[in-house]
Image 1: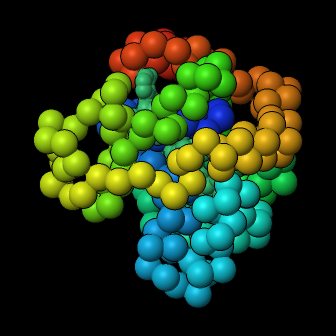
Image 2: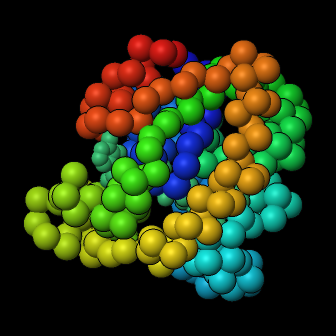
Length: 211
Ligand code: AP5
Ligand code: MG
């Protein structure tokens, strides 16, 4: 399996499906959201600079994100699944250049689609593990023991940007800056449009059938 990109609105299930695809096809999963949150949690100089932007639901600059992604990519081998990247046309063009220098290519862009009311329900009910980053949902994917991660036993909590007000900003950023990427990848013949409604397993099956 080559390199996959997964694309869609906040809370649509990119992280959940990336974890599944990474396991199924032995890919390295790279989420720019996770990379940025790691910098913030470690309170690096970069983390301190971007914390307010991320907590407020605004995109971080292309320059910062490209640097983080390229550094993380250099540590991987084999195929990739890029989760939440690219998010602007400029990032997509820079990714093409980066892939070209590494002899890699994007094989497919999975576009997950879901109604806004369902997105909101997924986002506000999400629980994330402070230890390993695993993702749960209060109602749809509860952990076995309340408040504890099934995988590592870490504490589960809410992301600071998972509230209805910040979700509005995240959606506005998505519509304005990320939606133009649909045309970009459709023109390249790479876009796979997937209905994001239904259980995670149902969505996974649709993705696997499409690629
Ligand atoms: P990021 O972390 O990428 O956030 P996002 O795009 O808003 O997406 P989420 O992680 O919130 O949702 P998801 O689609 O991964 O859904 P999940 O699988 O968790 O980015 C955060 C911030 O970082 C951005 O706002 C920006 O500031 C910055 N950033 C990141 N990348 C950037 C970039 N490239 N450029 C610039 N800035 C960048 O699922 C959500 C919930 O639903 C979970 O609770 C899950 O359990 C549940 N769920 C999943 N699937 C299903 C299902 N089928 N049925 C029911 N529940 C489900
Ligand atoms: Mg995610």
